[in-house]
Amino acid sequence: MRLKIFIETFGGCENEKDTYKSAKVKEFVKPSTRFYKLLPMKVLVPLNIPDAGIELLKKEGLEVTKWTKDLPMTKEELYEATAKHDALLSTSNYRLDATFLNANKHLKIISQYAAGYDNIDLVEAKKLGIPIANAPNSMTDATADIAFMLMLAVSRRLFYMHKTIAKGEWQHFRPQAHLGIELKNKTIGIFGLGRIGLEFARRCKGAYGMRVLYCNRSVNIEAEVALQAQKVTFDELLAQSDVVSAHCALTEATKHKFDASAFKKMKSSAIFINTSRGQVHHEKDLIAALESEEIWGAGLDVTDPEPMKKDNPLLSMKRVAVTPHIGSATVEARNLMSVFAAKNIIAFHRGEPLPYPVS
Image 1 (cartoon, helix red, strand yellow):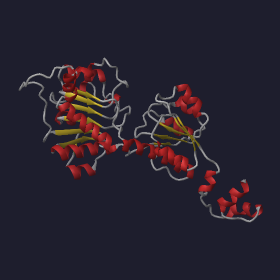
Image 2 (tube, one colour; image 1 turned 60 degrees about the vertical axis):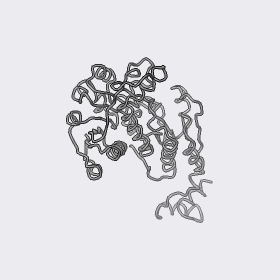
Image 3 (cartoon, one colour; image 1 turned 120 degrees about the vertical axis):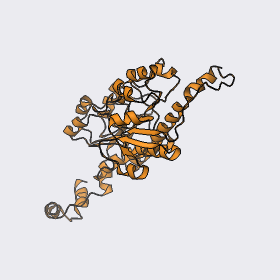
């Protein structure tokens, strides 16, 4: 069998002597799909994700083990299962730190079922030669929609007003009660103008003619041309924006970027939105800023910690809207995430460049 595979790989030699010679002098020809299917990788999927990507893996001839329980694996279960597999289609539920990676040096690839990858120790993975990939663009529209929805919900106190109905408090018309604020021609400030931030800005500009400011490490030419967006400093963003929306990755530089000092620099009429990562804002400082009315309101799809405790004071505030990290929770987005994560593993298996590499 080994000889036949070798002959197919290097281009049709007739005997073992010619095979050896061929390996020395002939140009390398990429192994065929049949060659790879003779050596299938074992892929672990440790969360019950949609089958769109799973079916692609199986069609490729890979052996897939999918966790189908509602709750994620325990740490012990993850370690035990990973030891028996070659590839990991992971999710942000699991912390893949240096300890995990060194215990699983055999892994050929880790593909993340998400755009973010702050749960993975990239430095250690690089040391160990484990390629990391993700699923960008798959949730861009879905997450931009959630940010836009939160902005609207906070501006009109929707979550709180719904609660008053449930409590039987809907009474007579009161002209000066329950007032919100309008968004037309206001200024939106975006911290981290990447794919999601750009789509959110398009919605703000298109629906309300909002002026777009952004704070980025680099200039976003597309946003400046299409939306007349203006790049500003962080302090300028805080001071000038009626709505400040965080769309950045979580790094050491962005952790708790929105703290007490940041909220003090915002308008007292401003709304803060975060659909990136919970630790981008300092939650105690945010609560204090809202209680003291340093800012007007806040909309969060991410919290710190997650899940949020049911007695968190943010949940009872009149101008706050909180959702349980559902930015990507659409049928379309979750299917694309599954497909994109699977495509990384398939490309690696075929010896092709990863379509969505991180490192």
